[in-house]
Amino acid sequence: MARRRYQKGRVVLRGKSPVWVGRWREDVIQNDGTIKRVERSQILGTNREVPTKRLAMRRLELELARINSPSYRAARMATVAEFSERWQSAVLSQHKPSSIRASQSHLRCHILPALGKSRLDEIGRERQQMFVTSLSQTASRKTVLNVLGTLSSMLCTARKWGYISEQVHIGDLALPDEGVRPEARFFTPHQVRQIIERAGQPYRTMFTVLAMTAMRAGELCGLTVDDLDFERRIIQVRRSVWGGRAQSVKSKASQKPLPIPDALIGVFKEYLKTWRETPERWLFSNGRGKPYSANNVVQRKLWPILDTLRIPRCGLHAFRHTHSSMLLEMGAPPTVAQAQLRHSDPRITLGIYGHVIGEAQRNAAEKVAEVLRPNAPNSELSGEWIQ
Image 1 (cartoon, rainbow, N blue to C red):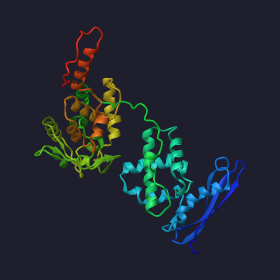
Image 2: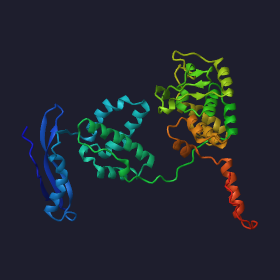
Image 3: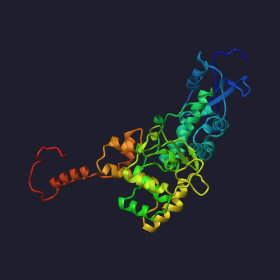
Image 4: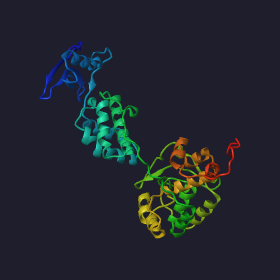
């Protein structure tokens, strides 16, 4: 390989709508490990944006600063599509099945169609913003953030492996507005009792556990008999089930045990009288001895009951929202609600599950309204704080 030297590059004006194109040479590591010097080019701007060759050269100098830096080393090059195959095989395959499926969907539906033919080094801040703007035309803010998470993970890995790539910094990108978020679905206590009464086993016990513990649906399906500790009155949450397969729980905070209320101990003991043992000792198993799929429980068992009761259809997560609503309604401190819901951040608890107006808040609003209502007796505020 020729000795690396200081480069000035060159610029040319081309096209019917003239644009300045900068050209330079760069060392690239080939797949066999050898280093090859190749020519690179980049559009620097239109003739209207950059009216003179001198200004075009100044723009090119910004790119060449990386090449001419004493710390510069040869890097690897690949298109997004090429690298995605290596990333999926070496990195994504180590993730949970649910994460693998979501990331593969992001790649197939969004990332590869828009960016697959581009080189990794071309996915800079401007290209990332163009991708976000295009994606936000058909996707929600949450979907955009999820797709960016997959792209960010892939580009970060590429950088660690020696490829030229720029990381995704969410704070530097203009994201779509959140819009109006739909209110989380939850049941009233009366509705929960009706649902449980109409459910046959094992679904009656499953719905009861969800309502009394705020456990996630996947965690419920992943319970074994050995996870129940009646002496200490706790449920050990060790795994989750997704698509019929066991995987780790959502986060480290999710591994914390849950208390078993006295009422639930009786429900468990009654259920265990007819429990059918399986090799893995699943607490709830289907006819094949495998853990239930939460989606199947919803579609085949929960929805028919909701239809009968004329309750709008929803998922098993509504039981979790019901439990959180009742905690806050009954005056449980945010720290207690956070511990029961096993969130790592209390802001998640209050932001997502605080969809209830407690009696203290309602009483305070009533006192203010009484003073401000039309035709109210003339009076001044006493200066006392509302308790």
